[in-house]
Length: 271
Ligand SMILES: [Zn+2]
Image 1: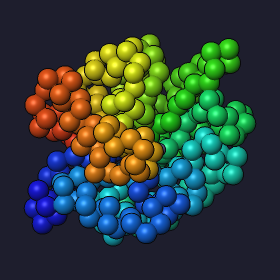
Image 2: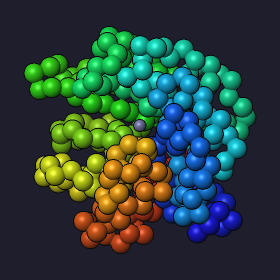
Image 3: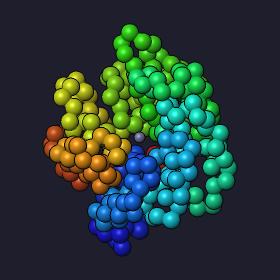
């Protein structure tokens, strides 16, 4: 498929449901080139903010591109720098706004780049935005060391305080128990390059068991480049490598897996 053939999101072969290709910190000179390459391959993308600056950039990048959409939000790493401008982006959005989600937001007890109390405040404030503006959420939830308080013990009660929130556990690498808790709450799970190169057998079995109706595919570009391009910079087009990998592993027709992931992405984000 080429750009001329795709007229709406459902025409796309795949959608990278989480990338940072809009962000000039990573893609200073080649954003447009990577976008065009992806579209030529029938692959759209959701450009996810991590702080106030990159959220603004995601909106600007997606605004005049047919198959890029924006998520706005402040990552737990950056929550110490504030999140007030995210609501401004939502308030000021134009009629044909490309903003389709809040994200990436959550808790990260692995790096603790922001104090936990601040991460929690930012998460709660931005979940309120998801409710107020009726938008799905791209969640980044990462646990710390086993001897530290569990991130999930904090996350689930907070999540449950906000009724009707829908979204995806992006780059999920936790336990079956927490995955099941997510599914019980209607959440999707986003698989990326990690799932193609992890040697952790438990994780591989977990990824292989994700029901197709709960599956999203993503790159998290520029990070987490899938096999066989590890060590190179990731890009939205490589979401197809994740699709091919899991179609082969699960003995599914590539088209069926791609269609399921694309349909889920279109549905969750209302594309
Ligand atoms: Zn990300």
